[in-house]
Amino acid sequence: MTLRHFKIFVAVCDAMNMTAAAESLFMSQSAVSQAIAELEKYYDVRLFERLSRKLFLTQAGGKLLSYSRHMIRMNTDIEKDMKAMQLNSPIRLGASVTIGANVLPALVAAFKRKNPETGVEVFEDNTEQVEKRLLSDKTDIGLVEGETNSPDVLCMPFMHDELVLICGNKHRFVNLTVIQPQELEKEDFIIREKGSGTRKMFEEVMKEHQLSWKAAWTCNNADTIKAAVIEGLGVSVISKMAVAKEINSGELYMKRIEGVRFDRKFKIIYHKNKYLTVPMRNLIALSKMIF
Image (cartoon, rainbow, N blue to C red; front, side):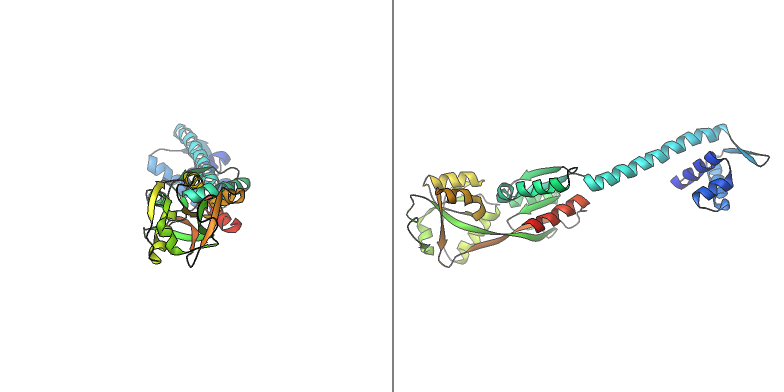
């Protein structure tokens, strides 16, 4: 039996008249009568006594009426809750470290102002880990700086970023206007861990220019890199937006490398089979709009 049968049965019970029930449901009387007959045949009971052209609910009919009202009410609640989930279901958002520190707070704040009922759960790690979570459905959408490897992950750029060479205010590079690429080979580098988009781009550009380099310190966050460079323990290549404050204060210096640039795009990623809810689509659209 279908929900349609139970709705017709309740309408007949409310009106105690097949014709009136049919009119309220915008159906033919014959269709209503057939639905009631199907119910009685299926349960092998009489739901109505037909006496002098009037309907009287039987004991079995009264029992079924209680169940029917309950099922219809439950269906209404289900529809209401599912629609609310579609509009306000929380977003599991993954972000690589640079984006998490420099882009994500402003984006989530702007999204919450427009969608106050929608929760956002954030996971922050390198690009490789965010991609793994997408593939295992632990994260809905990722915002990353690195390249993904799986053909099942869709990518779309949303923001330009530039990596820059930084040094402390007592480093020998401070008094140089432009750094010759070969000078980099003499330096200790404070660099991100493998799996990081920043690390991968740095390695690719250095290889492209046939430059060797030495990792003196590997770490998984920008704050440690900046602190180590400020103390003169080495140089680094890091997102320009991550060091704006320290450059303005004079703790760090940003230097141009002759003929070498580290340009990239931040990307939105999600599984190709992922169903994007309205809040997810809103977040994607907002990220492309404000940056």
